[in-house]
Image 1 (tube, rainbow, N blue to C red):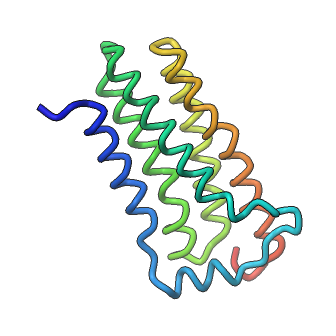
Image 2: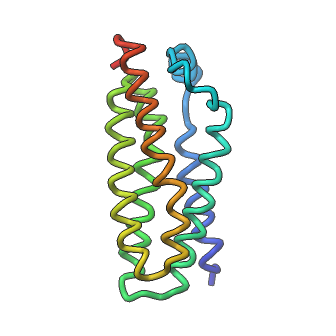
Length: 155
């Protein structure tokens, strides 16, 4: 039998990896977009997301090991949140739509809040490990919303 930590890690890694499936046209489109002047930390964003994904995987592992009665439901909810937040880049780039990115970002934050509310009673540490995402998500969504105003034809 595959250990739970390995299965959770592999599924999380594969979902996160799928979010990076972009062609060079997608990358060029996103790279040419204007960003807010105050966005001085853009090069740290890959590190921020790496930390968020690792914290999410550890959170899921802690919930799995706590063996709540609704364990499969919670794992499905973790997967839904990860699929939603991972969809941001490919959907935004494929549709060439910052509005779509803003909607996905907001949806991911809402789902992340619901997940945290469900997880805290099972494991407070698992809930705490969701905080990096819940802190970062509104920031990332706000950046995308600000970019709409700087790139009006890419709404």
